[in-house]
Length: 239
Image (cartoon, rainbow, N blue to C red; front, top):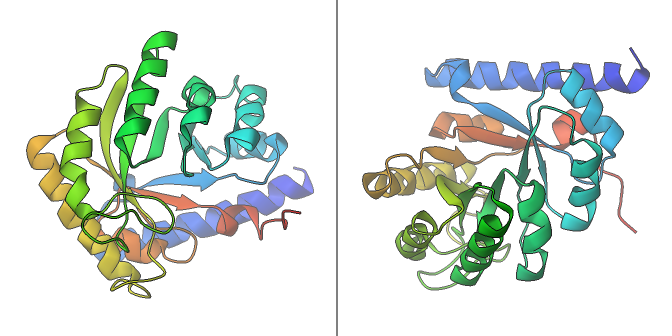
């Protein structure tokens, strides 16, 4: 084992213990929660090590970093998630490698993704990003649609060729009524997920929780947690 593999293996084991303990505390089976490792700012060599260690889901938030990394790791049995705010001029690139886009938050983006997915013959999973710091008709600080906009956007995704409505995603908000109340925000997302599944029963994915608050997300019922720092270490500062 290289030093880096030893480090990542130990970090992964620690995160696995945290998820298992959170599942036990919530009366859930460990298999109900999928770990997505957020590999942004880290090299393809780390992604290869993670794959060797059994990781199957990785996430990126910037296409300019993700596209070459995904290409370099195309031989690995990985599912790629795009979790950053997605501009329409990056859709062609992202649809080429992302299995799931977790940051779908506006109609124009859905239209662009559908057109490109059809063109290249792919089916892309979509999560509606919910902004719990937004008013009923506004977007959140870090992207996302207000809860009142979920139904309309979900219907558009579900009816768009090349796209698959998988569920909902949120980031614990820094402002508004849920600021500092991570578990309450994740519980709110679960209520919204229940509402969504009445019209779209297959949209069962709930992506919530990161390194600092994965326990709260598991307790609330999240199906996927997005963990970066706790696995890969403190991120290098971007110049």
